[in-house]
Every structure is written in structure tokens, then in C-alpha cells.
Length: 232
Ligand SMILES: Nc1ncnc2c1ncn2[C@@H]1O[C@H](COP(=O)(O)OP(=O)(O)OP(=O)(O)O)[C@@H](O)[C@H]1O
Ligand SMILES: [Mg+2]
Figure 1 (cartoon, helix red, strand yellow):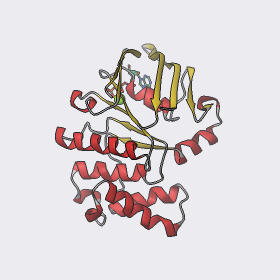
Figure 2 (cartoon, rainbow, N blue to C red):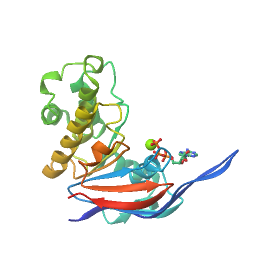
Figure 3 (cartoon, protein in one colour):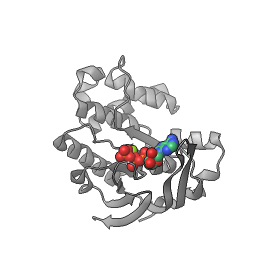
Figure 4 (cartoon, protein in one colour):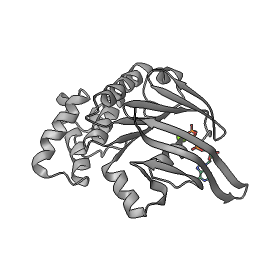
């Protein structure tokens, strides 16, 4: 399988507060292969969010590189990194950030508008993505009229609608019950297998039940990778 995203010897130090500098990551290397759900797990404070933010070009490492599409994206200008985030990547967060005054359909369509997809194509693509996450019947509902799991699925539809190469999900199941969380994990696995809506998922969790559904799990302890488990 082709490696589409790779962390090479990443370290991250946050500037000193009153207690001194915090070393959040030390010498972290990890590969994300096409068609895989890659999970980073670890205790609170182990560096999961910091790492995912660096892999997703939201933050810069202090040392090391992130290889994506054959180049080190940490060396790119902020404008180019912005373009990467917008067109090639997608983000799903723990607390779903849907716009409350918009329907599920409108929330997903907004993402397509921001990605520059022409109006004529948008409606078809929104319907396709909402159907893909099993919410075609809820497209006219506002977030407040949807369950937590349904809102998370709208957020996933919004993330996949512009066909990103990598979907980053920081604790996507943390606010869901186990059954709903596992359904989200299954959806992730199906999405990357098909490849049409995104080609790899990079996620974090501290829920053991969710890791079973990942293809590869890296364990972080105090900012270092201490084990790698390949489930399939
Ligand atoms: N902006 C920041 N400034 C200073 N220190 C930070 C900053 N962001 C994170 N840290 C520190 O870096 C370490 C790693 O934090 P990170 O958020 O990556 O952990 P995490 O594994 O995602 O934890 P959680 O499971 O609680 O979300 C922690 O010690 C945290 O206090
Ligand atoms: Mg975190």
C-alpha cells in the first residue's frame, strides 16, 4: 500500500509559560497508508491532538517533517498549506461544529461552496454524501433536530463531500455512546475502502472499543510512540 502521509521525526515544543516550555512530542515517526484507518491513542496529554494538528497542517512542528504528496508540507508557505487543508484534507472534531441555523443539507453544501465546487454540481454531491452516511431522510433537519450520532454523521458528510485525500478526526466518537461510536468507525472503514470519498483516516481516541475498528493503532506516551499495532 502506498504511504500518502508520513510524520518524520516530529518534535513539538510549546513556548514557555510560567512553568517553562512543554515538550509535547519527541521524535515521532508514523506512516499513513492509502485505504487505512490509522488511530493514535494515549492518555490525556500524551500528544494526540498536537500530532494530528501537525499532520493536518494546522500547526507546525519544532523539528521534523510531514511528507504529503511527495513534499514536506512543513516547508510550504502558509498560503499553500491553507490550500492543502481546504482542497486535499478534511477535519472532523469531537464536538461537532455544524451551523445551527442551517439544515443538514445546507451545512454540507457550505463546505462545497468553500471548496469552490460549482453550484450545479453541489446539490447532487450533497445528496450523495448525506445518503452515504445514511441521512438522506434528514437533509432538511437542523442540528438541534438531530441526535448526537446523526450530527456527527452530517459532520462526516461535510468532511467527505469534496473528496479529500485524508480525513483527520480528533476524538470523533468521544461524545457518542459505544454503539453509535462503532457505527461511525464502521462508516470510516467503509469510506476508505471505497476510496471515492477520501483515501485515509487519521484519528485519535482513548476508547479501547474504537481501536478494534482501526487498521493501525499507534500508542503515544508522553509524546513518544511506544507501540504500533497492525490489526489488519
Ligand atoms: N498551546 C499549547 N501551549 C502549551 N502547551 C500545550 C499546548 N497545547 C498542548 N500543550 C501540552 O502538550 C501536551 C500534549 O497535549 P495534547 O493536547 O496533544 O494531548 P492529547 O493527547 O490530545 O490529550 P487529550 O486526550 O486530553 O485531548 C500536554 O502536556 C499539553 O498540556
Ligand atoms: Mg486531544
